[in-house]
Length: 134
Image 1 (cartoon, rainbow, N blue to C red):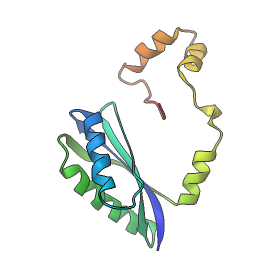
Image 2 (cartoon, rainbow, N blue to C red):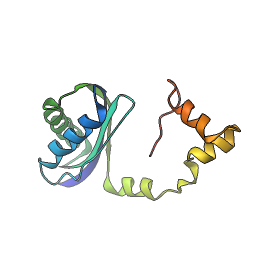
Image 3 (cartoon, rainbow, N blue to C red):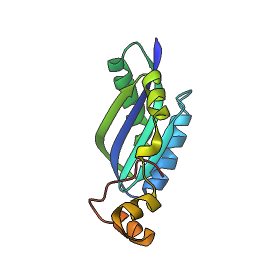
């Protein structure tokens, strides 16, 4: 048996930040999952470790953990829209990749030829790509 890193994301109606706090607490109470939880723009996501023999078993276990954890939240969490199972080695390679491809507000403003304030306005518009990191 080995550990797999699993990411799950779903839509959430209500206070996404409060739902994220509740989800983090629920996952932390379930043992050594090392959860990381995020919320934004109507979505709720978590990445945590699951011990399993293979990726399929890890996916089933993660969905069961997620379902139990979100059942107690004071928010309406929709169906799972993203389920990704990764080996820890691959996740580590992803995290070590060169972050030069990521742009901050200043870089986006320069690229678009607008002010930083305008970028902030654009980020609030539907259809503007969600940030990969904050």
